[in-house]
Every structure is written in C-alpha cells, then in structure tokens.
Image (tube, rainbow, N blue to C red):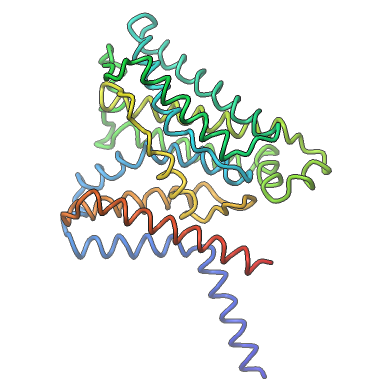
Length: 320
C-alpha cells in the first residue's frame, strides 16, 4: 500500500514537473541535438542569426499570448503586420521615419480595437479576425498596387539592421517587450482580468471585471505589437511588399501553444511562449543547416501545431 502511494506521489511530482518545465527540457534537448548534428549551430554568428530571425515572430507571439489566454484567437496579426508596414512605407516620405512609426502604431491599435469590439459584441473571434485578415490583405494590394514599397529613411532601416554589443537591436526590443508583457500579465489587475475572462467569462463578469474593456485592450495590445513587429521587420528588409507576413499568424499561434498556453484560455505564460518561439527558431535553423527543403519545413511545423493542440485537448480532458 505504501509502495503504491509512493509510486503515485512520484508520478504526480513528475507530471507536475513536466507540466511546468517540459517545454524547457524539450528546448534544451533540441539544442543539444542540433549541436551534435551540426557543430556550426553553436557558432556565435549562427546563434545571433537565430535570435534575429525569431524576433519578429516573438513579438507577434507575445501579443497572441494575451489574446489566447483571454479565450480568443487573432488570425489577422500577419496582415496587420503587412498593412502597418505598407502604410509606414507610404507615409514616410511625407512624415519622416518617426512620424511613420507613430502612424503605424496608431493603425495597429485601431485595427486591434475594431477586432476586440466586434468579438465582444458576439462575433466569433475566428470569423472576425479571419475577415479582417482578408480585408487588410486587399487593402495592402490596393495601397501598393501589388508592388513592394521601399523605405525612404536609412535611420529607419537601422532599427532592423544595426547591432549593439554584436547583438541585433531588434533582439533587445523583443526581450524588453517580453519582460514588460510578463509583468503586465503577472503583476497587474489587467493581467488577472485577462486570465479570469479566459477561464470563465461569465464568472469574470459576475465578479465585476469589465469584460468589454479587457477584451478590447487585449486586441489593441496584439495590434500594437504587430505594428512594432512590422517596424523591425520592414526596417531589416528596407521595404514592404503586399504578401509579407501573410503566414505569420500560424507561427505566432504555434509558438504560443507550444509554450503551454491553453487554446481554451485561462492559462499561459509569456516566458514559456518565448521558449516556444526559440524552439521553432532553432528547429527551422537546424533544418536549414541540414539541407531540408523549405517545403518539408511546413510539414514539420504543421505536425508540431497538431501535436501541441492535441496535447492541449488531452490536458483539458485530464483536468475535467
């Protein structure tokens, strides 16, 4: 009897440990495997390249984490990224690079506000953000006439191309955003409200939480972060084209779910999302280094998303 209890206790502790740190262990294992398969993986230049590549998706995933924890979804972050980038390129010759960034941030906030308000009014988040994605894609093509628009400011381009202490500036921007987002989610009343409406929206409403305000703010955060991501993404390229970012929402969702955020809402952590972002970045990098075709990489990412969602469903069934 004691042996049974001891065995159950050990299994329970192992389960709790894997639930808390499983994604970190998987990431460490993946890094170890990558280093063995391709020793060049650990070269500082390659590590820097990985960090630079994941920054854009990382910022999008940070916003997506807010949305998914609240029990919703945002399929429009990729096209918000593109639309904000297009508008910034378009207005930059007239407003200067600082004015262009301000316009991009305001546009991202407005689109996010529209998404949040319509979702609060009862429109399914999947339908609303999918429709917004299609709408913004059309607007991007109309604005650009289907051709890339180049940046007119070298100072703006430096935001995505410059280094500080041999590390790309955009990496510092990403890490700073993650730190701020972690504090907001874990240490503020707003953060607790996000978890509450994701856990049970009716209970949250009866508890006095302003569901409308929280829902709209969550989408505004997602929209603004998509705009910031557009700044560093287009600054690195020095231009923006109407197809840029159209698949970014899938990587953001994948990183968020891989990081342990429940698709049903109410549970998640920004630091774990960052680990999910890094895991996807390392995976893409090692596939590139080993010569795997980019088409096969889509298959791998799709399987990862299916596995992450299946794990989410299993966890919910186990909790119930």
